[in-house]
Length: 481
Ligand code: 6PG
Image 1: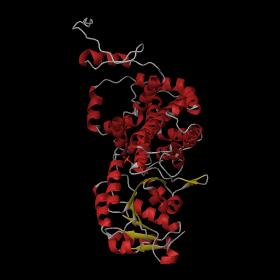
Image 2: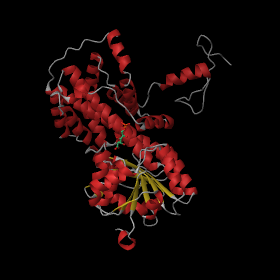
Image 3: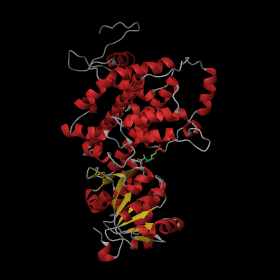
Image 4: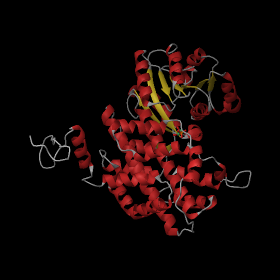
């Protein structure tokens, strides 16, 4: 397991000891690996050693040289610094110190195209590079995250015995698997985060409906989310929603009512939406979630608009259990759509970038450790077991049946939201996607007619092969040749 017994050297290095890096280093040490530590500001290293030095075999280093010298060869170094330029700077520093076949692993939330560039930069310097998405927040990093490594297969094989032990296991299977070459690991982590955005937005819309239509208070909603956790919606995000809603702060009132309604973002959800637009994949739930955060950020404008723009009168009334169940069903159906879209995005990315992504395995490693961990991921894994080439989750019987079962409630809830002026962009765009998807013949024939009219862009016909153009007259009549 460990090279340390033979060489006295560390098995793995962690560079960058802010909370995520420090917790990952402690995780590796607790699993029995020798861990070299380095942070530019040595105080963090001292703090880690003072507080947790007894948890395992740590090799704290004061300089990069000392850090590199502490590692068994070929060296494996996880860098945990802020995404962007700090990662490039760190790679350049390391390249000067490392030897051929050593491995640099970027464990941050890097943009996958940056990872592809860094992979090539390292390859040119005879260094192997792995871009590894790590999900699970601070607690996951310590107790066992979900890990999505991408890069050269041989480099992954070298680190696999360590990272599969550091990752959490579900039913005996580690939540870590080789994803694919170059930026594939960070790509999949990006889509994970996009889905995380959509999932959270959908929960937020359910909360808004219960609060605005039915006037439920935080404690009542916490109970409802706790109930939902016992069913199909069972997930970490539903569990922590109940915890956040239940929290009472020092004022004796629910904390949630004191939190400013402006959501921040670091960029991974936006990247997912941008990439979906580039690939031409209809990923509406994630994109609406990004826009909803942007609208939340316009707090001043919203304050002004509330005063100026009329709002439908909402007559708050006590909900029946059926009405609460309808919101639950609408949430579940919309969630299925969000995941179907995210998984289709990965299918198209795999084709576009020439990656052999195993979507069933990706669902498997998202069952534990990560932010979107949920019972639901087992259903996705089973769908890909049934058909590894499944083009859309909604074409799988389980998901089709689940959506069909929820459909009536889903529509009813959205109608209610629209009538009462409650914004449910992710619920309603998910339903619009569903309604668009389940029609063999949509209305884009008219778009083609219009494009042909003003731009001679041509159209295809149902009854004949080929490309056609109508010579439109000013009054719309066809000009005879
Ligand atoms: C995870 C999280 C993690 C981080 C998000 C937050 O998987 O552990 O996704 O990576 O908390 O990036 O993203 P925003 O700040 O953009 O919400």
